[in-house]
Amino acid sequence: MGSRFSPFRLNGRSRFNSRLSLTGSTARGIPRLVAFWLTAHVTSVAASPCVVLEGNPVQGGVLWGQTAPDAEIRFAGIQVPVLNDGHFLLGLGRDIPATNELVVTTDDACAQEVKVAAREYRVQRIEGVPQQTVTPSDEHLDRIRRERETVRRAKAKRLGRDDGLRAVQGGFRWPVTGRISGVYGSQRIYNGTPGTPHYGVDVARPTGTPVLAPAAGEVTLAEPDLFYSGGTVILDHGYGLSSSFLHLSEVFVSVGDQLQPGELLGAIGATGRATGPHLDWRMSWFNQRIDPQLLVPPMPE
Ligand SMILES: [Zn+2]
Picture 1 (cartoon, protein in one colour):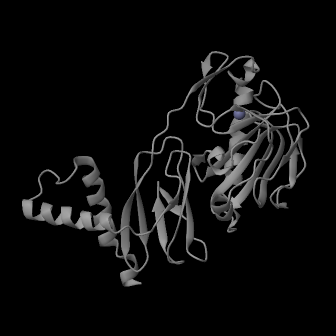
Picture 2 (cartoon, helix red, strand yellow; picture 1 turned 60 degrees about the horizontal axis):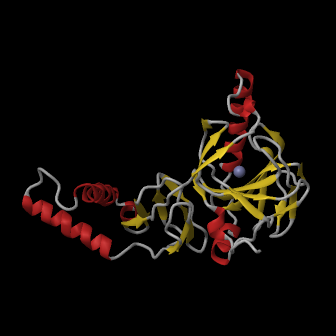
Picture 3 (cartoon, protein in one colour; picture 1 turned 90 degrees about the horizontal axis):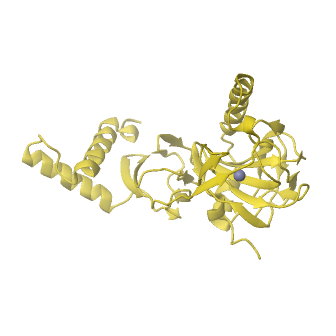
């Protein structure tokens, strides 16, 4: 146990690393000899990464790696769950910085930088959504707060299944095919009022079109009518990775249902804040919003 946690070395390296990225090399006020040792030390850490990461290192992307099953991993302020075989996932949110620190603690502590490519997001103006969804009343604000808590609890479950990892490696399938009418990350302006960014990919199809599970998972939320998202299903793929399906006209599953890829979960609708029937498919890894479009093949013609 003593060597496993090595808190002194871990803390020391984290601090030196952040200093390195701030100033480029030596920190002000440190004697030259010590500064030289710090620089050499940090360089050797950077030259031999703790783990090899695979995947798409871009905002909205997902990475995976493998380490010892008993490793402790921290990334983006998150204690990262490690599967029994040592695999783990890292989600890269919409606005994640260009440089992030990954700390892996096994018998020893080890830190490496994870570089993430930035993306540019477009501005999308949406006219004609119900005005009450743009400027909600106090009563609606109460409801919104309650519903956010329900969603937060559903996403906090952190199921131990490996479907998310296998689907990230092998590919998700589109829950529905059709014209893409909205993309991940856009800054949205609703009826002239700036709103939160759009975190999903929108596929426009008529009301009633079947929506299928893009990968295996367990249903952790099945609500017929949330204020913003209308009929909503959350499917947990394991280890922090989940999919949400919004604006459904019908919800065919219940909390606790186990779905296989391609199983029916709901039907397209225009419930909640929507101007017409479409599926809004979102993904998240803990609090990091993922771009589902990076994990599926191109939309078929
Ligand atoms: Zn949408």
